Structures are given as C-alpha cells and as structure tokens.
Image (cartoon, rainbow, N blue to C red; front, side):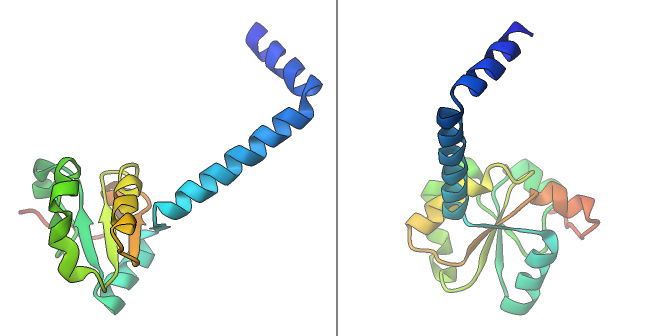
Length: 141
C-alpha cells in the first residue's frame, strides 16, 4: 500500500517524466508489434486460407500438433524453427500464418521470417486455442 502511495506521489511530482515514459513505452509496443507481423483473427485467417491459399505453420510441439491442428497446416516446432525455416522458402510468395498455442510465441517467430525477407507474414492472434474456442475444425494426426 505504501508503494502505491509513493508511486502516486512520484507521478504527481514528475508528470512530464511520467508522460514521456508512457509515450516511449507506447511507441515501443507499436513498433515491436509491427515488426512481429500482423495479428489476425480466426475469421481473417480462414479468409486468407480460402481466398489466397495461405500456408498455416503450426509452431507448437509435435505432440500438441498431433492432438489437433488446423487442416493442411504444417508443423515446424518453435524450438527447431530457425533450422527448419528453409522449408518455407518455396512458399515465400504466398501468405504465411503462424499459429502457436495461444498467440504468445508466434510474434517472435514472425520477426525471424520478416528478417529473412518474407513479406506476407501473419500470426494467429489467439493461436490454436482461439481457433478451437471459435469452434473451427481441427484434425488429428
């Protein structure tokens, strides 16, 4: 409780410093978000898959992928993504959607793809968990 009182006092006494910090923080979040590829909803993902033949890359571990994955997706687990990224070379000209369990890890991997020259990189905002909660089909292997 005392910490909160000190924080409020600090903000009141240093409002310019606090405002500058919040602006820099917001700009950092926006910049990093743009680098990570566009986060798309499940509806946007299905539209990309159906209209533009997007490739879905599931970056979850093999065991999770086998338990249920998006139809026609390929599995490149996060821990081996850097080594296996070359497998995506033949798909460089079409949209690529990265899907992880809940949307937290795909952003970092999409940065790697963008750095390698991939331009149509997207990440499934809530991952396969969001896909499942929207009652969209999953297949087991």
